Image (tube, rainbow, N blue to C red):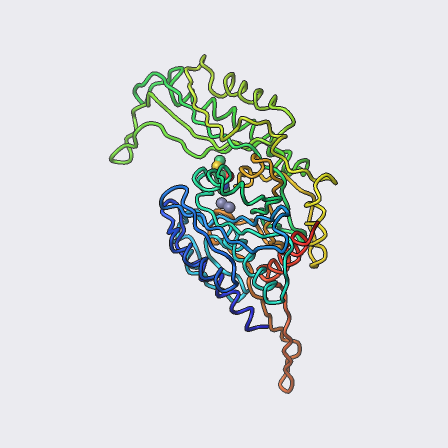
Length: 436
Ligand SMILES: CSCC[C@H](NC=O)C(=O)O
Ligand SMILES: [Zn+2]
Ligand SMILES: [Zn+2]
């Protein structure tokens, strides 16, 4: 068993060490690695290049009744960039510390999930399990940069339609508690740039309507709105997927003084950029209302402001992009039971606070759940020191100590979230593939 676990963990390390960091991911190296994994468990392998240089790998485990809609297990291969000098261990090193934590970009988002799908299938194959429904496992490019050249192209393809997919599992978020989180919808992402212009002048002069004053008024108004939303989250009145988030992600004005201390030129232009996420609602009224607020308070013409707004694939109302979580959708009950049967706990489906490829599948009319089997772990997606507990941490406790007797007790304080997650997928894949 220990030998098995070592092999499982070392395959995870191998995948984490492949440099699939945006903006220059080595997708071919990852595809080659996945191909070897697929061969070792006799899955059919296909690499599809909808866009040259961006292979999408599709594996197939054929069911005994391929006429039934199939299961799709999706994960993205790319990971986000990192600041290596701010990490305690190298972000592409996959080193394991004495507490059993593995450090690497992608341990949570989401190379863990991709490998857990394969390890679960490996276990099922080894046990002689024969699925009734077919299982497809997709390893897709570009999720972190919007997914247009990945799942965006995939769902539109004839290839995808011929798979006859019935349900999709994709990434979720780690849960800080015992109970896993699961997601059946996502907030709507907006990117906003606002720009102020104004009279330039000597740094010493006080006057109305400078570009920085105009921009500051907008930022103040947006930060008040941000605080009102954040307060609801802090007070526990709403979860993170149910409030509007507004975060300033860039700020640009003026020219820094070359000698560093004389800064006496007031700029004629000032700009700021914001990441905004909005919960889906049954209608789009709230989106219209927010844009009105933007026009009237955040970038008003009366203050010489202009703005650019990017709405991502948002021509459908939020409601249509929710996966049902009642009896009309058997896949939800099956997921719940499968996790419980494997000894896990799972919460009620929530709205994912950011975006994932699930939105493309939901837009194509498929039920999709965002689920990463990581409990008791803080969410460190896109953060420094992204980690996951892969092996049980052993603590030696000194119980008695005097000149004559010393007793040491071994205690396991944490269990491997990674290995536990594989068992969750074993249970889920069994439940999903055997359902008729
Ligand atoms: C709007 S597409 C961007 C997708 C990206 N996904 C993960 O972080 C996100 O920012 O949520
Ligand atoms: Zn992700
Ligand atoms: Zn991400």
